[in-house]
Picture 1 (tube, one colour):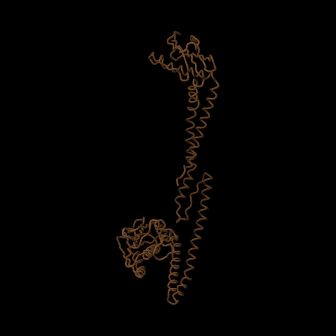
Picture 2 (tube, rainbow, N blue to C red; picture 1 turned 120 degrees about the vertical axis):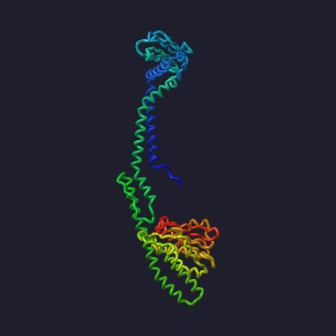
Amino acid sequence: MTSGPSLVRQISVRLVAAAVIVSLIEIIGVLFLYSADHPKLAEEWVNAQSERIHAALTSGDASQLAQLDVPYGAEDWTFLVHDSKRHPRFQQDAKNAATFDPLPAPIDHDWTRIARDDSPIVLYGSRHLPNDAWLTIGVTGKSLPLFAPVFMREAYAHVIVPVAPVTILLLALNVFIVRRMLAPLSQAASEVDALDPSRMETRLSVPSTPREVRALVLAMNRALDRLAQAMQTLESFTADAAHEMRTPLSILKLRVEALEPGPAKNALREDVAAMTRLVNQMLDLAQADTLDAQLTQAVDLPTLARDVIERMLPVAVARGCDIELKNEGGGSIKGHAEALSRVLTNLIDNAIAHSPKNHSIDVVVGPGPRLIVRDRGPGFSRESAEHLFRRFWRGASPGRAGAGLGLAIAQSILSRHGATITADNAVDGGAVFTIQWIQESLS
């Protein structure tokens, strides 16, 4: 599932869109005001063409004046340039001379006049150029295309140039402020992602501002308090229930043993053994959640494996199997010896349950902080691999029926020891469970 854009980005995009809309409104407002003021537009148009003609006049190439194109939007035009002594220097004739009145001689001041205000418009103007020359110009054309460059020039000079830098600065400041204000929310999200179910005492850092984020974080912390309390109640109930069931099961086991031999007794014995195993696993699971403060013992892995194998060997022999220990340089780690013993016991017990008779189970220690348990059974399917460590999940196997808690308990205990457990199928058959500690060996 892909995540959407961040809140900072969404706010920033909306701020930019708002700034663009405001700028467009300002530009439209300028265009609207100028569109109704033809004298002002005519004056600005004559100014723009005066600059254009003056640039060609001072280029040093007299032919530049003759090569000037008709202005954008104009249908026809004519202009006359006088030198500083008011003598004609250059004249651009119109294509249709009848359109324009004769251009007058320059006078001592600039002027602009609209001879016809309907479409097409006809206007005249005169300007004193910087090189002391004089320009008189006439043009005709439809008002909208003729004045379009003036509109753009005015929008650029009165909207874009003065407003754009301020708008960009305000947008940058707004984005910076939004990012700073939402930083506590991003920090809270990171802390939520880092929450570990095995560390239920962890709480989110409470920011001083903004008030809304602070209220959200406080509410999440209260929710975590309630969740931790519920988990603690559930764990206590599981442990208490399992502990209370041990005595009735022991009594039931004694009564079953007192029965006459036969198929019914054997079936009851297997049922009681399965219930006893389930109760013990429930106790292991409840105790696995309280190991965090007890992981201080130096545990020698070869010694641990040897002790567990000695306890499990009679069970393996009764099933017609053998257990072989291979020490490849296993080291010591810091943890809880009894809990790790339960993990290895569960793995070997599973291997015994799934191994055929007259086959060996390998327990490999090392190199370094690593344990491997390998059987010669049928292994597991690719579909089963995704569920092996799920609580109460049991695969379809010919081995002894269980509650589906052994591997879940092992993973829970190992995660608190900073170790991982993985399951694979051996190339020549059988399942391989590998325990690897992330911490370095103590030896």
